[in-house]
Length: 172
Image (cartoon, rainbow, N blue to C red; front, side, top):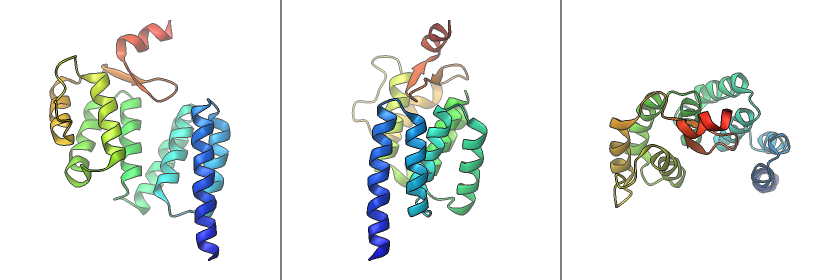
């Protein structure tokens, strides 16, 4: 019973943390996710969310260490693998990110989280009219593979993918 209560509290804290992120308060979100992690230390989704918050706060080394440690404990955890893909995109390594995605699409093609990430990448990287009509994850990934170069995208401060040209304009 106590474990169920802790899990429910962790879910509530995560919901509040997501609201804080959407409201532009990554520090508050980080604090809430950390509280949730204390209640659900085996939940890789919470660890991945903490990593994303750390990245928004430009604490990339800390985020990378957290992901590395958590992946050693749970190498098959999809939320951690997707957070790693996002970190590669953020670090300007889209080819490596797509290589990481290849086995994930095969194993987890029906995952909503994976589909959201693929959709964001396709929106940023595929020219108008080149997106597969059926939005099949495998077809989407195949469409992405040939056209990505190292400077094609970056993530903006709210972790939405933007084109490299827009990234450069925003920096000026």
